[in-house]
Image 1 (cartoon, rainbow, N blue to C red):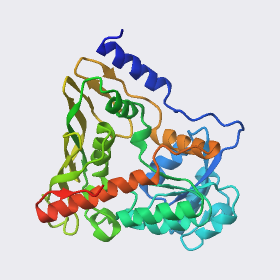
Image 2: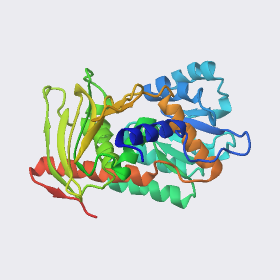
Image 3: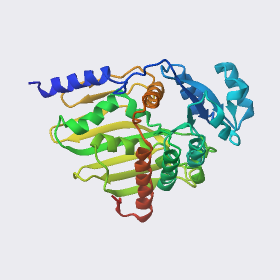
Image 4: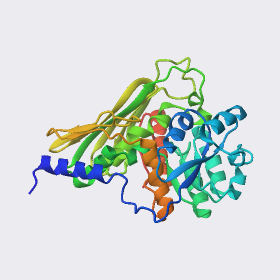
Length: 360
């Protein structure tokens, strides 16, 4: 029989071997054509370059409201005029056989409008996190995709990352006993004073943008859905800038097992840590939500070394394989909805100063 350390090392090694997961490889050489909607930082600096590293998809088109960006993207990626759209004519993608997926990479407040518009073209929909501003908007996206019989995946890249997948397995295998307390923090210092993330109507605020990282992490690390927001509070060191949305939010969640999670998110300081305290030990990822270098350790000295695979490429390849093989996506729309319903409860708890019970 394996002792605990051998068990963890063995399962960690297995996780690294099976990272492009349980999907069967496609039987043909077809690749999934992806159109990016919104050509801001995340599309420009991360998704488009990552698409060049994928095995099962490629950059097929763009949707933008900034005409000056079009020639730059066409030169860089060889995108034909017939694969370039704007927000008014993106419904014409329905007639473009080269595009299989429409990836929504817009400010959060626009996700629902354009994800629904994408679904109505009959193309599969990938939507960046957070899924939408409200749980009701999330449900409207899910319904639109169901109605049009297309797959919907939310861009939680961490759930595709190998060490994160290992943490998710620990929630089931419990190698250190029952989980008792979790701590998760995610944030960075944002010096901008005129950005959509400062506007409430656009889905701005630390809780929406970065808060879904610790929120999603304590859900997948515990393997449970919270039953209540025990407490929440907002704070700011820059009240002249953060007039509409939160700069920093602290929140505590309660789970059915009795475990609790203390979480923090901020636009005012660097935070990047997931810690799980159990009856017979502990484990952590530090950093846990960076674009690279996610690594961890356990109380008995086991190391979870960083994986070098591009996270966005892994995510998009996994989602492309789900389309090619007609299997379930790893992170469906319901996962995004679960987070946003809790985000809304966090805001209610902060406003009321009291515990908010989550409907089952």
